[in-house]
Length: 158
Image 1 (cartoon, rainbow, N blue to C red):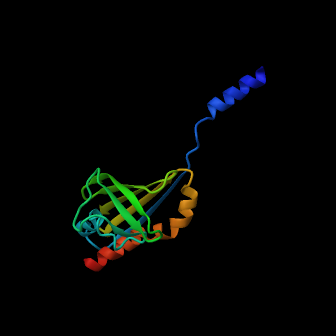
Image 2: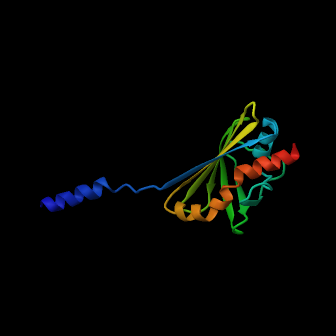
Image 3: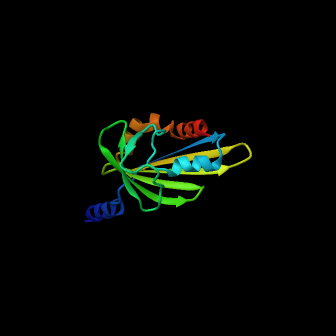
């Protein structure tokens, strides 16, 4: 009787699933102005600088607005992936959620700050779900380059 009640307690108490979360932040400085860097980030149809994304289904010139759903074809697979723009604070923050496969959720947040040394670009990548360790192993080399490739692309324009 005691053993049976302990097993019920154990199963009820530990019934919640353990959610794995991987979080990485990349920070780089750019010589480009805040305005040109922000314009490159907010134009979601132009993914020529992104090491993971190949093309989108959006018309050129469209800017990110909260609630925007669109599709991106990645360089790794020809399968389109859905993206959702969560939050936009002008000239400050852009948050995008990637809905690729069940069992994993990815969020990318771009933040820009203007200082005397230049414009800082902070790119935070968060993966949640039970598939996140496998996916992180697969996309990490590309994620390491996102902030630096964006800063480099803007410096070429500016």
